[in-house]
Image (cartoon, rainbow, N blue to C red; front, side, top):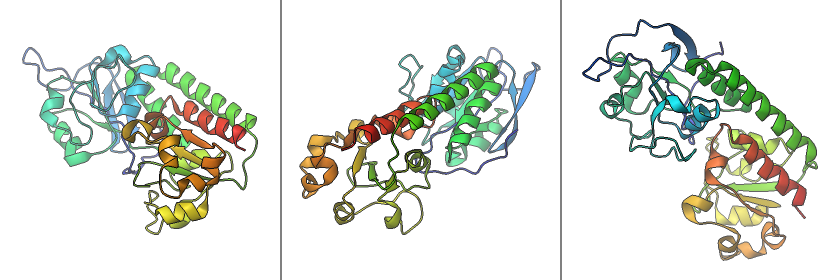
Length: 305
């Protein structure tokens, strides 16, 4: 078992696995199941989960992706409104940001997945005998792999989870090895048009660190929270070699939009066409598609002029 982690990252949308017997004909969560259980060590402690959960509810987009990637998709009965991948996930109006215990219980879950204990949802579900497995946002790659293995253990797909994490490790290692070292090159990662960014100590920042890139947001993080809002003057002064936009889907940002910002057309990254338009979701989740995010960075490093 892994050590319990703390939680609360800005970009966290993680996992809570809730185990409860499907109530009889009344459809309510009720007495604990007499079926065999497995114990998963999560951020909220040791949690007993039915060995073969059949009604999983995921309020985490990242973990929704994981559940389907490890072969547990057919066991998922409902996912949150932000769980937009894969396309066949049973998307509902359930919210991971403002979770409602009554709405969740209506799906008669024997496994619920969350990343944050928003509004005391963990205790609310435990009060009606719904065990909760809380898996917060990963702070590094090892934690990301660990959470995937946790879900594999919790859903009866241990072997599939191990294979997935093994494949992810291999693909990421190959991408990093194939890319030329970018030591000395700087980058700016944009979360939104208001210039919120990430520092090197965040999960996203550590991914960039694999290539030796230097983050222009590090010195601007006065609050040391990892997600500073940069000023236009700071970005222009730093003149990053590469710019990565993680606000293309949410906010319609791209190379053309960037060039129209006052002063930005003179940045080296813009002039040299080293602006990378990322998929917002892939760039903000720490699940199965992490290798795609790493590859996007590796390709940019290779092509950078």
